[in-house]
Image (cartoon, rainbow, N blue to C red; front, side, top):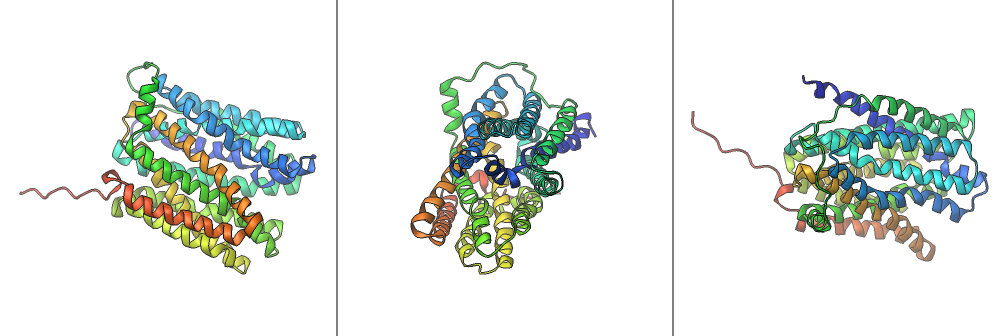
Length: 397
């Protein structure tokens, strides 16, 4: 195995630590903000700053990464911003400072484009979807462990403990990130990407199609499963611990489905068929959420929805760079990740607005409708690049 191959496990450990540092405090962030004097509207701004900064930063980071042929730098910077944001939130119990440091965590998350492109660079283009499946599984493993240990540390050691836990993970990841090996092109620096070239990358048919579908997927994820499933659980009498279980069952299946979707399922059925099925299944789950009737039923729906959402994310992320030349992949990934951040905003806003006016049942049925829209658009517009590869013709002996 090459030296670069030997570094793949190290890079996956760094990836897990990165997402651990970003998620160790997420289960307790909103209650903590209220406890230090933030209003509910301020809590919303604090939570939203994470997505807002990603929307602003992801594309420029992708462009700079391509321009300077640098991926590892952004892996390191991601850890630096994680460390600064978690330490700041731990040391300064003030709503406005919490907003600033939470925003910095969004800057940290924007560096994810460097992680994904660096890792996919270890593999040939035809294996990009499978590679993304592996790194997304590690991503979810880090998040799941962080959610559990973060909540436990808060219960045992106080409100600031999850922030310090994230800080420790970030520092450890920062040290290890210096040993990551980057597979780089021969050119050390490229010409700055021009607006015309950026527009050309953004008009890549596969990238445009997958980005639109990703907006819909994120809209459903943040509008249904992430933001308002806990509200439904609370109406069913869930305790804080049971809400934690609800969060974990949404992420756990993704560890497996990411691997299956990116390799076995994509090869067997093609990305297009898998994406259509995922959207259809998510639509069914969303329609059933408000009629769960019990916590166990809600857990099952959350588990199934999480499995299909994770598979969908892996398939879409892999397709976003599958047809893009290597020199422009970080720009394409930055565009893709910036665009799908739109869904992270729209989902909660739409469900919240409809929920206030007509009830959460209507909001969830609306999310189900978006799932059906995603299914239809996938079936119509995903091209040959997303179909099952044809078998090579047999050759005579």
